[in-house]
Amino acid sequence: ATLEPELYHRSAGLFRDRPPASQAECQLTDAEVAAAGGWASLLGERQRCLCVPVPHETGWLRSELAQRDRLEESELASLCAGLSVADSEVPDGAGKPTQAKKARLAGDGVHSWNGDSVELLVYADECGLKVHDLVETIAILSVGPVPSSDAPDDENTEQQQQDPDAPPPPSVFRLHSLSHRRLANQVLGSFVPAASGLLEAEDKQPEEEQQDDPKWSFLRNALLGVFTDALHGDSLAAEYLLLHLISAVYLRGLDDPTPDDNSAVSAGLVAVGKLSLNLTCCRAQLVRHVARLLDLLVPRLCRLPLSLGCLNSGQLTPKLDCDTCRLRPGLLQMPAHTQLVLDETALEAGRLSETGLANVRALSRLVSRQAVEFDLQMYRKDFASDLRVLVVSEGKSVLPCDVLLPLEAKNFVSQAAAEKDFNLLLEKVTLDAPFLREARRYLAGAGQLAADSGAYEIGAEQQAWIEADFVRRRQAARSKENADKIINNSAGDDEAEGATAEDLALRLVLCRLLTISLGRRRPTRAIWDRVARMEAERKRRILMASKNAPA
Image (cartoon, rainbow, N blue to C red):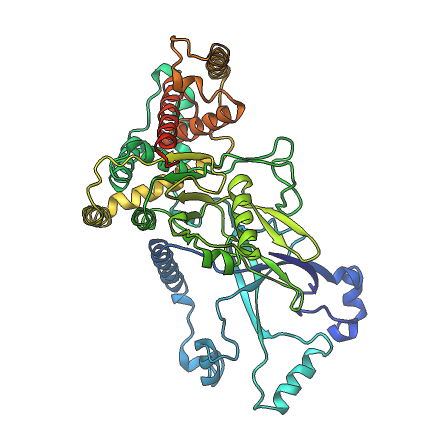
């Protein structure tokens, strides 16, 4: 969250958390103040952001980041080896941590960080950071007691010295940023592949000569095989799951894709590029299997069981605490592209409280608009989000997902056999470290391209046959309505369905994701026809599931 900016004193060698009240307090001469352009020129404005550790990081990502940190520390130590000073040349007590300092660094409760939040101070007119952004910074850590609003720093220190038995004052941790950068798409940092380079050669080839990138095709097919096995042999569900895992919002609204009001979302804006997926006809066992498999592949994952207890007692959206003037965080405050698995198989009969109804509305807003509502007491405000929401349920979800797909298990025998087969699959995937590494890079690279509005384009030729196909399906649907039957031409029963603007928008999103997943920039007629077959099969399943549903 961003806080109100502060003034600071930017004279060389001088710094205070609170700006000095006068020239005498800074111990500056009139000549020094005049050389700086006056007293007002010595004061600058710094931007303040409240930052928390990245939530829901998976185990493999934490391991990768820890390994990277160790390598960087080793390289830094080797660079500084020639600059080290011998202990004999260091005066007693200078540069050597005392026992008290060691105790504080170890965390004795005086100035120990509880892992909650830190305040990032950026010394610039604009920091470029918004709510839910990931930031990486090189900064100087400042640790100290929270200053009292009605007493200066010296009086706070004297009060603590006069009463040594008093409990230590609360500490505030500040990071004074020397350099920072916004991680726009992934927390993977330097080991995200430069996937955009795969598309450069395609621009120079005519459509009939273009071929899928062989490495991406291999990884894509391998992932589809793993997903198919995990989903009991359902290859269509595996295809939709893969497209869901690389989906990303690349445009908001039509006229203002990047709101200036700190990523606030106005009522008319829509999120383009999202693909929330609802897998139905599933049991609780499948939810565990999918979550365990995705935990090996995605950098951040949150599994949320939608039980009555969780909905009625959990806090999904942030709320302002008027006593402390700080936001109490909500569970839905996650970085972009975090995988959110909602388990509706845990939902049982019962009554939702007021909090439970508010949480259901918050989830619906997240799924439909990719926005998280902040309760600021006096008013409420939506802030942009970009989470990949996967809902697994027995029947149709209560949430408005983009894609509803009933699961058709091809090789399911029993729960015991399914558990055994999945454990064997998971062991096989875990032991294949090279495949895991490349699969993670493939998903990260494809997701990075999906979030880039310039990574995909539709030419005049593609627009022509997409429009012609939509007109043909509209005509078939109109004929069906008028004659109460289907004209038996190239448009079948399933193809006549889905001739609405909403279905066209969904097919365009699916075509874009399928094209990017193949390492291409522009779609082909074969890709569009493939999307049409996928949608026709999906609608057939929905129709069959509705017929087989109990009355």
